[in-house]
Every structure is written in C-alpha cells, then in structure tokens.
Image 1 (cartoon, rainbow, N blue to C red):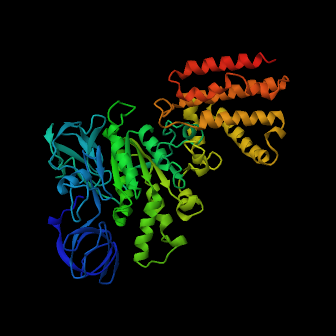
Image 2 (cartoon, rainbow, N blue to C red):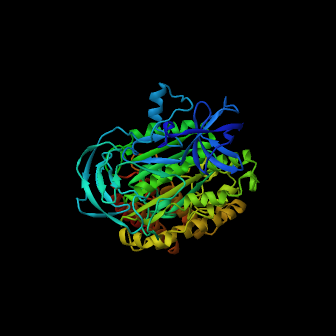
Image 3 (cartoon, helix red, strand yellow):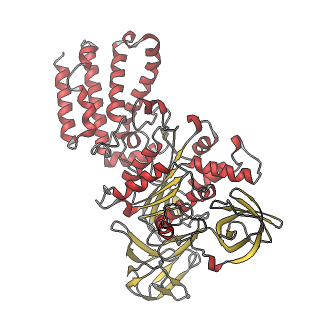
Length: 589
C-alpha cells in the first residue's frame, strides 16, 4: 500500500463492530477513503456514509476490536504502488508483498496491522533515458527504460495525471544512472518531477484513447480453445464448472502457455492448497517463449479462502490495475481471476452486514454492475502514449452444485464473449480439459478467422465447421444409441460415431502433464484435424464402395490418430499417417 500510518490523523471513534464491517462516528471522510481502524491500525475502506455514521469494511480480521477505539483517516482512496518490482512478486488482496510480511513476522502466519509498500522503495534500478533534454512529452509518454526482470523491460512513463489532456511539456533534465523508485529521473518545464513510482486508485480505470475491436487471437496452446472456442487478445472469457471439474488447472495452463507478454494471476478466495501449488510451481516453471523463469513476467495475487473476506472484494481490482499499468507500456496482458464466485460471495457478505436489500439468492442488487465494471476494463486499447496494448480477462466461476442458472454465472454470461463450460461428467470420465463442446461458445470466431486463415490455413474455418457439425451429429445420435443400441444404426451413422470418437479422443482431449502434449500450436491443432478429416473422407469413400463398416474401423492406422498429440515431429508423423490411412482403406476396395 502507498499510504502509511505516519500520514494519518486520528479523527473518529468506533461505535460498533460486525465482522469485517465497522461503524465509526465523528470521522471526517469521503467514500472509498482508506482508514486505519482500532489500536492495532487495521486497514479498511469507507463504503457508506450516513449522517455522522461512517461504515468501513476492514481488510483484516477484526476479533478483539472494540467500540471506543480510534479510527484514523488517510484522506486517500485504496491505491496500488506501480513501478519496477511488480513482476516476480506475490501479494495479498491489497498489494502487501507476502514475502516481506513473512520476513517481518518470522512466520507464515501474519499478525494484524502489519503493512509494507507494494514495491521495494529502496532497490536501485539502472535507468536508460529514451528522450533527451528539450524533447516535448505528454501524459503517458515513455521517458526511459529499466530492466525489471530478465524477460521484461519496464517502461518509465509520465503519469497520466501529471499533465492535462493534449498538454505537452518540455523535458528540462534527464540522465541515465542508478536510481530507486522515489528518486527523480526526469524534470519537466511545468515543474513536474518524474519518478519510476506511480500510485493509482484501484477502482478507477487508467485512461486510454480508444477501445478497439480485437482481431488477433490469444493463442492458448489448448486445442479445444484455439480450434473451436478462441479468445481474442483483449477479450473476456468465463470458465464455469463444479468442484473438481478442472477450472484451476485450465487457468494454470492458460497462465503458462497463453500468448501474452505479462500474466497477472489473482487467486480470489480459492483453497490454500491450490494457491500453494501455484506459488510453488510458478517459480519452477520455464517460460516457453524465452526459457527464463515464468515468474519473470508474472505477478501473483493470493487471497485464499481463510484470509479476510473484505480483502477478497478488492483483490480483483488490485489485479486489473496492475494489468492496466503494463498495458499502458504496450504489452499484452492476460489476467486470470480464480474465482469470481468467491469475489461475489465476499460482496454478498459485506452487503448483508450493511443490511442492504438483497437481490437474487442474497447477492446484492449491484452484482451485475460490479461484474460489468471489472470485465469492461479488459480490451484492446490505443493508449494515451500512442502505443497499443491489451488486457484479456479469464474468470473462473464456481456455481454451487454446477448449476449454471445461478446469478453469478448468468450475469457473467451477459458480459463475456467466450464461455468455456466445464462438465463434471467429462471430468469423471477422465476427459481433460473437461470443456463441454455442446454448451461452450465463442463470439470472437468470425473476427479471428481472418488471422487463422492468413497465419495457419485458408480453410481453417471450413475444417473447424466440419468438426463442429460432426460433434453435433454425434450428440443427436447418442440419444438414439441409448434407446436402441449402436448396432441398430445405419452403417453411415455408425461410421460418423467412430469419426466423432477420434475427434473427442485425439483432438478435444489434451494431456496437461505430458511434456509434448501440454502445448499444441495452431499449426499442429490444424494438422490433427486434417488427419481426422482425411480418415473421415477416405472411410466414407470405402463405405460407398461397399466395404463393411467393421472392416473400415478395424484398419491398423486408425488408432495412430490418438497419438498425434504426443509427437514432437508431428508434421512428418501426420503426413505418413495420412498416406497409410489412404493405402489401407483403398486396399479394401
């Protein structure tokens, strides 16, 4: 946090305490001001003002806090520290670095009232100017670069609020050298002093020039996503699914493999063991792009289910503000929120303690508005400094009992353009990723098809549509099979079921724990589909020539389709497989 207890003044008294909600009197405050509550100085935020009564949500456990204790106001909203040092860091929901807090406490169990800046204010960074004295700059312009990590160059920008819109200023002093984030690295003729450190209110979106229509996919390396339900760079997606269906693993895969420059992973109210796995795994992972550690371009925000509920409500805003900061530098950012249901539950708890009128299933009436405000901060933007950057937001949803009709899932569906529905039945059959292809959809397909046609194959959309039609037909036939059995179907429909089985097993399934199959490029995704399509075409030619369906499905080459995904030299494997399938089927007639 940027605010410190040295800058506050005592001007209020606690009147009542109800869990994380505290009411104070005689507090001179505005909405969303950060305050320090009680003798221990617990961080909180003003969420309601009615007459002389100020209501505060406290970001820490409030047991032991009593009426009569002081409340101190900072006069500033909840902000995050922005600057070099955000990457390769792990924060709690209000941007307190967990490693710093642990070293202060000498324990993994944190005391209340402990605070630390979001970035190290004393660390020295080598600053290289990108402008010279006499150059004109405006808000958001890059004035220099520091090497934040081995993977990412941090661009030092003029703060958006340092100059008015369309106003320019002349650089009167700038020099290369070693500086900490609070030292002035450049001076402007209007008196502004530029440092590497910025502060920004988490609930306020950073300014941009224009939100553009995205036309490039966020390549995920997951066949079912890239092939059937792609998301754009700057797009939004929801991953709803019941317990154990694979939401977290799917988001881990996206964090590891998605074609983004920066990853911001927000663990919002998830189980502690899952966040522990993320925190332990990510530092060990190599970035497939550069070979450097993946954490070198990742910022983690961990707010587990046993952490204070109020901090959970703010953690997604902390994450999206960090993402916007890197977007302003011209980077493509992928933000994973796991899960927005826990965030909504935190809102529900706070709302009930405020005695607000409940909406559907007890959620506050403004649930849809809050979800919209969060997802709308995603997009592909033209930044104020002329660069372009994107934020792609992928939110997991945990509907109770897998009921997609509950309010959080339904309200999310109205906002996002990608819906990746996880299915507990598929997970039980060990089909992973357990994304139900009959319920999922992507509204980005038409605007992304030109990119795939130009960069992968001209017939990308045609062969994808063939796969979708085949899977749809299989779904209809399965209802008949359950009534009369497969053998009662005509031979052409039996063959369709066999082709659809290879689509499910060789194309839609993917092993996240296999060194080769864990990532599948769009080119490989396309080739796997062409191999299955060729088997389909040759098989139906053989059927038309009078070959019994049993002989067609029994050829030796067909099971090799399931092994394409694990082949490193997949191009030669697919070429050989296609030739072998043709030979074996044509021998039949």
